[in-house]
Image: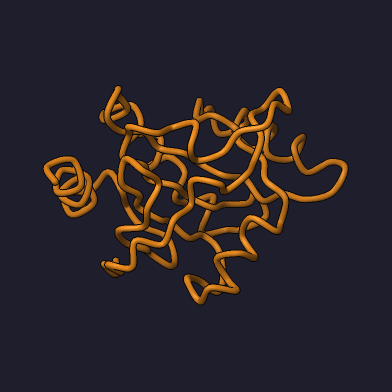
Length: 151
């Protein structure tokens, strides 16, 4: 996990909810966020999802939320993501996004691949970035979330 200190803003980062309704990070204003970019074809992403669900169950509140942004593209992308979540019995929200959402992070040299997690403050500004998978429900992962919530 790399604390960036850049304050790069993501409030305008666009995606949708599972019903296709437009969303942005700004819709979560007032909450600290763990935004995870994932795809069903990404093996490390798939392995990380149960830990993200555990963190969401333990920490999601009026001050914090796990926001998993799915990057399965194409006409059947959302169905592949839904099937993966159902098959694995994961109840995380499904937030599909166009590939441009992730390309923005690549263009700004935030990341190169999946999975990528960005920790954001209440205004949608970047605090830290993790490239690659993490055991978010481990003692170290929980310590990161606890530190985020205590700031």
